[in-house]
Amino acid sequence: MPSQKSKERILIVDDSQSTLELLQRNLTAENYQVFSASGVTEAVEVLENTAVDLVITDLKMPKISGLDLVRHVRENYHNTEVIMITGYASIEGAVSAVKSGAEDYLPKPFTDQELLTAVNRAFEKLKIRRLEQASKSKIKTGPGGLIGQSKAIQKIYAALEKAASTTATVLITGESGTGKELVARAIHYGSSCSSAPFVPVNCGGIPETLLESELFGHVKGAFTGATESRAGFFHAADGGTIFLDEIGEMSLSMQVKLLRVLQDKQVCMVGSHRLREVNVRILAASNKDLSEAVKKGTFREDLFYRLNVISIFLPPLRERGDDILLLARYFVDKFAKEMDRPPVQFSDEVLQVLRNYYWPGNVRELENVVQRLLVMTEGNLIKAPDLPSLMRFSALRKKGFDRTLAQVEAEYIRHVLDSVRGNKTRAAKVLGIDRKTLREKLKSIEEDNK
Image (cartoon, rainbow, N blue to C red; front, side, top):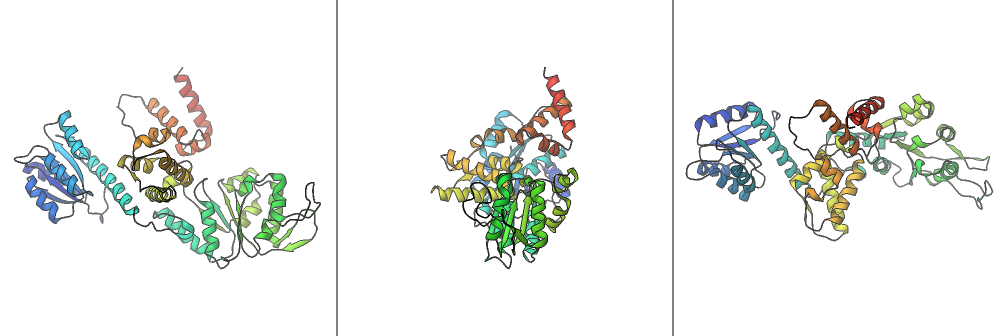
């Protein structure tokens, strides 16, 4: 149901006065602004003088048919959707309506719910198209190059501003691919020490045996292969910021050493007993729930509270709504420019799939998908068959009502597992159940299929 402020404009066209009154009553009750016309000529006059979002027209009318009106709208009003209604329903009529450009085809008699469902579907498609058009203009980026206009990302922008105004440690959490390093960079370059070094460190990508040396440095002869003294990342970041990504992968013994640095502001190079003061701000990030890790004993509680002075959670891409389409357009423009090729457009079907896909890999996965599409697609219009097979499978599919609840549940569970690439922990979270329940359901599904 539209909000009280939306007032989308709908033009209804029918030579039956009773039908016009019925449609007007139902649509006005849903807070739409409704205009009416008893024929195509009158409808064209309304369109010329009023900005209309949706036209609902009868098919068979005296002199000029509804199909002619559909063609007129499609040729002259790109940002107006059309729904065809008729009391003479036929396959040929439906095909003609769709080919002419109607978004939907409703045979009379239809229920109030069927009408409103078709209207909502048309406005959703129109919203996606308008957002795509708006995103073709210069996309405004937020702090650190972040892109988005959703409420979720606006909260991140506000948190970044506060974090940049202090020197407190910050813990950034969120799924892989949500942009945690971008947030860390935004905090650093928005702070008073923006001219000082920003040093990113992937704690999960450095072997445990080398992590201490990489962070704190080592002196010559400290271990086999240490042929010369070398400063660590903390020395390199002195006066600036060190970003410890995937800090949840750090061992308990290393956590103790890091805690000491946080407390004393001093580091000791491997193989040395001399302490050196460092002025470094620490930003940390993890795709794990560190509070749960504390309960399990795999992450130190005292270190967690030292890091978690300011906490910023990055929502997954699937919870950021229309930001998905803004990001897709940004990546299209980026890779088209890099590849020196003309601008590429998405079909309406592709936009809907992108908007509704689960995105287990988040923004990073979206970027990779868009790059793949530009590499693999030769034309200037990306269509649904160009999408990766997993995404085509994830598009909404209409099914009959002849299946049992167990069959529907089994299909949905498989769909969720596919979308998260078989990760049962993540699938269980999406489904709102624990891993044990998911295992039991999968076992039951396997037995039913024997």
